[in-house]
Image 1: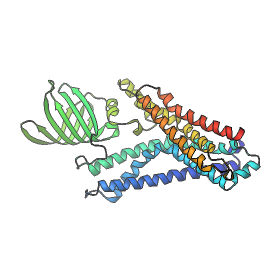
Image 2: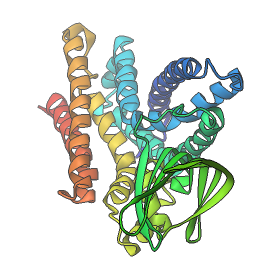
Image 3: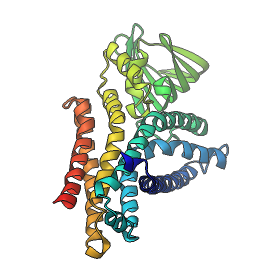
Image 4: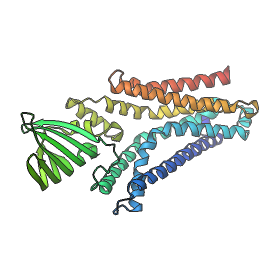
Length: 365
């Protein structure tokens, strides 16, 4: 435990944090620039789109995307840190002073654990909130442009049946976990499944027992189009059912996930996706620890022994395989073929054990 608190331990921890945060910031800036260029291209024909608003929209969209890349930032940061220490012979000096590999890896492991806790409890809620803000800004930018949103052409779909008949709702964008929709097209059928009308609206808000549509244009067979300021459409959908159709678990804050899981189960809606996301966030600190173990296992080789490039490529390959494994287990969990706990923790166990065994073989034979 003294290695975590003495001067050398703090030095190793600081070097790791600087490397990991440097990789994180570099990728963040790169993603913001790429997204900003794409947003500028999409808004080039919009007179109301200011450069500052477009930049803010891109800035708010990127944190959630970067959250998925956090384990790889830690992996690359860990390899960069230990390769730099080895190249400057600092690891050689530490070994000569009687410090084992396990001792100078432990500060990075503790730092990765702290980073993971911060990412789960602070960064995730902030990124979810910023994503919601970016959606509102996208609605302001593209609200008056048919099909101008950043979603694909199909958008979001949901079907509902009430005493008035069936309604099929399509929305270009979803905000507040489906509570507010923009760019709507509604197809209405009577109780005998005969087509009644098509409704286009700028936005809709889910109220208690009905959808409130604004800036409405109604198209009926044999009747000229009718414009209305607002229109109510009855619905029996609950908030949990709407969330299941118009939102993704990744857009829900870590602190809100338990209540979302309970409300989905009480409403009879599948909650596998929310459960998986919750357990993935709980396991995230330990996944970062596993990434440090992988990074250390391929980065502690002395430069004079050669073969460093192959070791680095093997580390990147191991990280990629771990990502593939996590995607496979995620898909199996969402299809309810694997328990969410097993799906979330299997990549952690595989990555951690692989790095531990590789490091154990290198250090202790």
